Image (cartoon, rainbow, N blue to C red; front, side, top):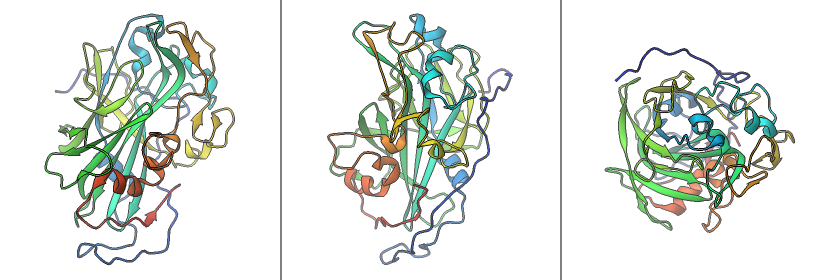
Length: 338
């Protein structure tokens, strides 16, 4: 159901332009691929592919405690929501800038599959218990694996989500993929997106720590925001707004997050956001940890075989490890923005 009219507020400093960048690799052999598939990059744009499979996203919201900012600390936002690229003032600025709904994506392509990684950013990972820690900046996400079948957008086969330092594997109903080295943690729900009338995966994030799973693993408990991939960066009108549009931005857009990877103001080390203890971080928990959030190329489930960052930078390899895949899986990238 459409929500009430709202004022559209865009995050300061973030370009909404979507730029598809790619580094062309040598064409891989196509032996074993379904008839009609090519080793060349596909005709569909990265932006359109990312939009097609972008999640309908349920965000639980908690208003308890000072650091919750009345629920604002659980709203997704652009990483430069405050108009600068300083990672060490995002906690401080959460309460004074519009948190316009934004998510980020990257696309990796082989001759047989597409892999789309989505990142959801929060300026605060916060707490309201002396048994929990807090930290500045928070980025969790999901990678969806799509088999090319000759149609424009392919067929969704599996997904892996990021919940802190653990990954969780899911398949949609009817998928041919099964458990590989890792168990299947559940069924990936699909639901109609009113903006395009198509079936999209449904994900959810917990309040405060913002771990991300398929909906059902986490869900809204009480208040919460439901974000739809509808192309506009809207600001929730209240902590229980169930109809908020979010926009997608390419991680590899000119001047985007990947372009900032060497910035010592935004990153403390490779793939790890800079974050300090200013602005009251730690007041809601036992302490505030520094430099504790990771970008997609820094995501890691330490007790699994794939290397740090592989969910984004080698999703074909990670999928081959996590899942049993009956169809041919080509692992040579024809589009690799990393």
